[in-house]
Amino acid sequence: MVLDNLGSSLRDSLDDLRGQSRIDEADVDNVVREIQRSLLSADVETGLVMQLSDDIEERALEEEPPGGTTARDHVLRIVYEELVELVGDSTELPLEEQTIMLAGLQGSGKTTSAAKMAWWFSKKGLRPAVIQTDTFRPGAFDQAEEMAGRAEVAFYGDPDCDDPVQIARDGLAATEDADVHIVDTAGRHALEDDLIAEIEEIDRVVDPDRSLLVLDAAIGQGAKDQATEFERAIGIDGVMITKLDGTAKGGGALTAVNETDSSIAFLGSGETVQDIERFEASGFISRLLGMGDLQQLAERVERAMEETEEAEDDWDPEDMMEGEFTLVDMRNQMKAMDRMGPLDQVMDMIPGLGGGLMDQLPDDAMDVTQDRMRDFEIVMDSMTDQEMTDPNRIGQERKRRIARGAGVEVDRIEELLEQYRMMKRTMEQFQGMGDGDMQRMMQKLQQGGGGGGGGGMGGMGPFGD
Image 1 (tube, rainbow, N blue to C red):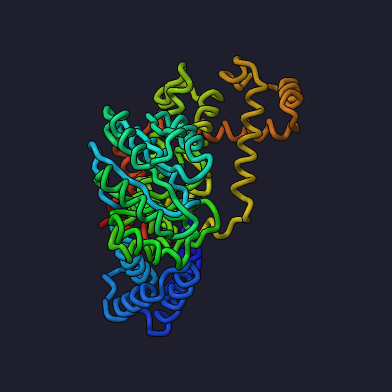
Image 2: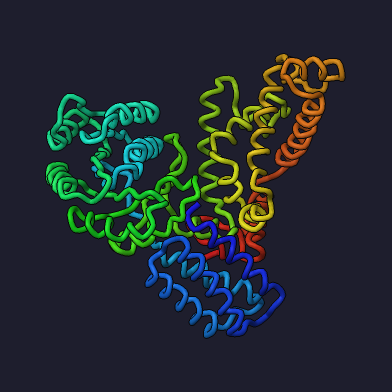
C-alpha cells in the first residue's frame, strides 16, 4: 500500500513512547526523523516532507496532552491529523449526471480505471458508460471493451476510426441515455506535444464536469512535471492512484495532488473491476497507522454479502441469525469474504488486527491463510448435501471418504470441522444479542485498535471526532 513503510516505522518509533506521560525534544526528534525518512523514501517531494515534519514537531512540543492521554497517543493523534491534512479531502464526486475525463501517461492504468469507476458508479445506482478514444495504443479498444463487459456497463469505441475527437463526439451521442460518461483518453510514453494537443481538443468537445489524472503509485518524482503539464492543459480536479497492490512507493501521487491543488478521488488495486475504493482521508490514514477503518470494512462486507446472496439463489444471510448455522452458511461466508478483496487489505481495516499485528506476521501469512480457505472449499465440494446441512453425521469413515475425494489429508477435514464449530458458537452468541449489545460491541471495537489510539471509523476519525 502507498506509504506503507511510513505506518510500520512510525509504529516502531511510537512504541518507544509507551508508558510515558510526557515527551521531550529527543522523543519528538526521533518520531520526526522516521517521518522524514519514510516520506522521502516514498518519493514525496522534499518541500512537502519538511513542511509536514515541522508542523508535527511544533505541535508535539507546544501542545499539552489532554488529561488522561498518554504521550504516545498524543503524538499519534498529531501525526494522524497532520497526515490527513497533507492528503486532503476526497475529490467531490456527486452521485448525479456528469462527464468525467481521464488523463495520464501510457501504462498508468487509465483503461482499467475507467471500467473500475464505471462499476463503482453502477453500484451507486447510476447508469455509467465508458467511451474509449485511444487510437494510439494497439489493443486499447479490445481491452476497454472487455473491461466494460466485466463491469457490465455501456461501452462505446470505434476501432475503424483514427480520430479520437470524433470518437468522443460520437460516443457521447451513442450513450446519451447514460447518467455518467467516463471518457478514456490516449497516453504516451512521455509528455509529448501531440498528446497535450489531442487531449485539449477532446476536452473542448467533451466539456467534462471533472478531469481526473490517473497516476501509477510507482510514479515517483516524475509526478510533479506530469501533474503540472496536465493541469496547464485541461485543469485537474482530482487524482486516481493505481496499482496499490504492488510494492509502489506512492509518494509521487501526493506530490501531484499538492502540485495541482486537487485531491484524491479513488484508489485502485488489483486487476478486477471491483478493486477500487473511494478515497477517504480519515480511513486511509487510520489504516496506515494501524487503527483500522470500520466504515470501509462495513461497505465491503455489505457489498460482498449482497453479491453472494445474488449468486446463491436459495441462501439468505439473515437466516444465519435465526436458525441453525450449517456448512452451507460457512461456505457462503467464505465466498463473501473472498469477494471483499485480498485478506491483508481486509485485516488492515479491522482495529487492532492491522498495522502492528500485521508487521509481526510472516510475509506469507496471508497467502497461507487463503490457501487454507481454498482447501476448505475443495473439501466442502466433496461432501454430500446431507453432510453440508448436518455436519454432525460426519464420522471417521466419512472423513476418510471426503479426504480421498478432495485430495487432502484427514487432518484438513478435522481443521475444517473445528473452524465450523468455532464459527457456529460465534453465530449463536450473535443470535442472542439485542441492538444495544451490538452497538456496545462496535464501540468497544472502535476504541480497541491502534494501541490505545482508537479504532478507525472512516468518516468520523479514529479519535471520535
